[in-house]
Image (cartoon, rainbow, N blue to C red; front, side, top):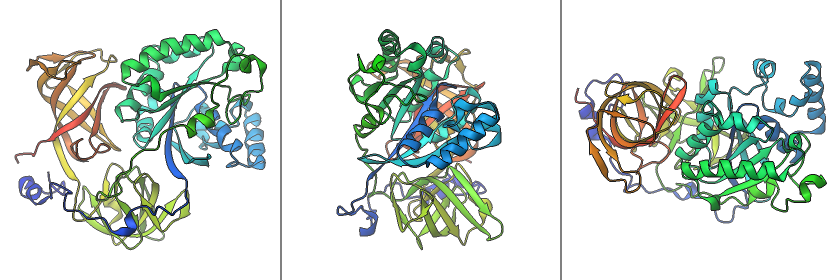
Length: 470
């Protein structure tokens, strides 16, 4: 586990690495002040099949909560109509690039904010198109909870649930990232005349699938709505076709009913880098991401991994506003000084100088093989390994055992191959090193998944970091 990928003497380096944060003591400023009257931050991923209306729904919520003014909305409507895409006006509030607007799809993860009664909600509007699943993953890894948007139209729901549809893949992925609270937003209900039968059919079919992914019924809310007609978003529905039979929560209410997550304030700093912004004129570099543990403030020294460089925090930005302190759970942009910008990259991690994150390229994983798998996984299988925002080519070097899905105990040792729906312990070797932790030490840096041919074929956790015997 070399601190630098240039170092060949990995065992010597990894022996220096503190194995435990047990002796870490947070400073008083790092812990949230009970008297601070701020709303709790909630990172909310909006996921679902392409064209289910995710961006339109997000844009509507921002407009209705006052984050987009009437004047800005009017501008989006005018621009959308000029291109003959009038119904895309709300989506354009988040899909800002010309290509996204031209194609009418989201490609990157758009981040926006609004306040509810209980939460400061960070909206991670993810792409639904299958070509952009790696981008969707980048957003979902930062999520505390998710809205799974379903297209209720005839054929729309079925396309998302098809073996090639993204409803299934997205639901599986968000569960594998540890998201256990979801709101199922059954959108486009206006296209089926707000039919209760259609809503119930979707609930029955999708409910069975969500249970198979590991979601508990008690943590799943079902909300029928129409983002285009503004029904059941921030107030009870006014259309009698819906209000005559639906008497549950509206969407904003359901968001406030989500349970807040426990944050790792008292652990050493960990921030996976999602994106890097370089300013050549000022010669500074900024790292964006979600603080998974610890806290940051200006003047603090941070270690940038995997390069092993130390830099100083110059400024911090949250919601595009300068802030004094950022704590676990916050999405921030950290501008760094005293560091070579080429060593700060997406997929890296900012951490405490005394508690560096592990860097390795050989892992033992406990995985669940998904039913998207068409060719069995064998020793030598070439796969794409994803962990937080890092991606690396990998190959399976050992299949240790298959596990019984009910008990988790070994049911077969050293099988020749793995097929869909099997749980197993495997070893993978990566082409290059990545920052990671064992799942028991850090959930965010210990969740991994394997993709091939544009499909996620297995999700899992890092059970052991194997030191390279170089």
